[in-house]
Image 1 (tube, rainbow, N blue to C red):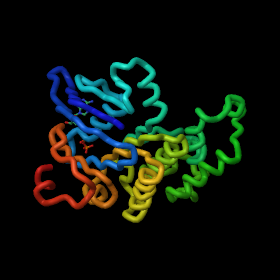
Image 2 (image 1 turned 90 degrees about the horizontal axis):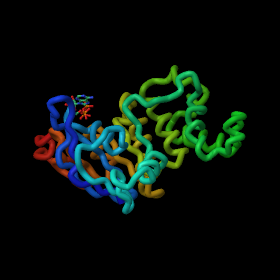
Image 3 (image 1 turned 180 degrees about the vertical axis):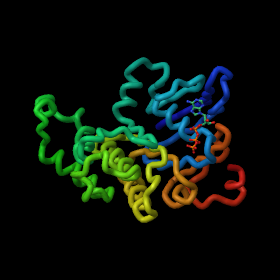
Image 4 (image 1 turned 90 degrees about the vertical axis):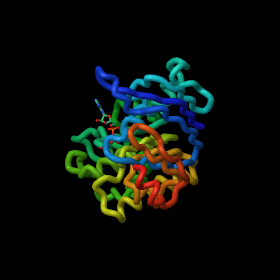
Length: 241
Ligand SMILES: Nc1ncnc2c1ncn2[C@@H]1O[C@H](COP(=O)(O)OP(=O)(O)OP(=O)(O)O)[C@@H](O)[C@H]1O
């Protein structure tokens, strides 16, 4: 279980509050969509959870371990097992989509294979399977620099899946995709949550959140103003955002 209590974050010399008193509990297998207007703090929330930003205050407990107070062990477990997909994912632009996914497996690949560049055939096929699942089979041999923003996002998702991430934090992972492809990618993530108990926390547009998420957080002005199970938002909830 992930438990956050009273997370607060402010920025700049004036310490402008960006996140205020954020508290929640998340169970394995949930797919949570974060919705809210531009500038409300959605990306900052994900960045804080990924430990890419320091916290001004708050507690962060994962499966009983206090991540902010527990020394390096908890932090390195998080860095190892959580994947953070930013709006512009970091890929090796001169390497193929498939190679970018394989690189995500480096931690599980014996050193001699990493040094020699040899890849086990089941690793190779595993990466191909995930690329196919995400609708990228025909792009597997394409260099990342020739992929669109949405395709790069999916390569980053594939890398996280192949790497065996238990938690995925994704900032608008289907931006730029046509509706059919967006549904397919989010459907894959949802079924991984349901079947493999993976946890996803992702910034999404409202209509995709309503369709795919098991839970929706509405964020406005740095606060979670509603926390509901996945369903269509009421007009009152939309008006609060
Ligand atoms: N590095 C920074 N320095 C100063 N202010 C920042 C910085 N990063 C974010 N902010 C401010 O923090 C607030 C929250 O930003 P954040 O990027 O989390 O919003 P968002 O909800 O993700 O917006 P969008 O939907 O447009 O991506 C905004 O007011 C933004 O201007």
